[in-house]
Image (cartoon, rainbow, N blue to C red; front, side, top):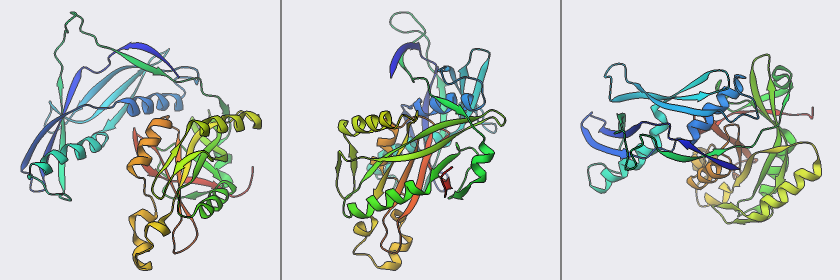
Length: 346
């Protein structure tokens, strides 16, 4: 990665107001928003629409509040990220769900003060206030470092043909970047999961980023997984080391197929986590499927921040075969998602 100096694109500060279920007001908290995932999603949306190419970064020109229609300023119903392209500007809108994790963090303050109990339901509103112009040096601009992603190799391919030889797994959301995973990759991950037993294990998903200009749309094609042997693992956590990335890159170079890292997979030894639970309880346990821990989230955000990056979780449950859950970026948030299973090699 390389970095450049860019002017700040956001002229507002944001505040979250919390309310109890009965609509009584708890209070408010000023928050520092990480715009990175939203900016990355907006850039990739412009790329999916063919407005910017794989070798263009797409400069974020502004982040603007979308005022709540019923109440108006300062409350918002979302925000808009504008991406400046060579020819024009592309806009992507986001809902206030983007602030959900910040609202949860803010609620802990009211729990500590005894105004809210752990587990209590609450709702929140987001307000935006224009920041005062000017600074100590007299400039009305702030300068920040902006990450510049390397050029992404993209090849043309038919999305319809890919869908025609695949089977949907999980809930396929229309806004998600289509992802295709071979059955043999799941089989390999399941085998490694069983061998690992009481420790988490995992690997890196590699493959290609494809573009269908007739739609237009881009999609992810996983071609293989590379087992991460050099990790720090225990019953509840997996950490990749520097040796992991060295070995994965060496494997990609040896394959000579122009593949890139698309994401990662890891196991959840649910049968060990829930070994003292009754089988009936294990079947409905929230950790048995579609569970992504805070550590998992932090790793994905740090290592796989690209909007097309995906994660697979191999759930080693005591009540049957290893099952798989998928996660990926959607409108700047890491969410449970579906994928397309390719049962035979194409």
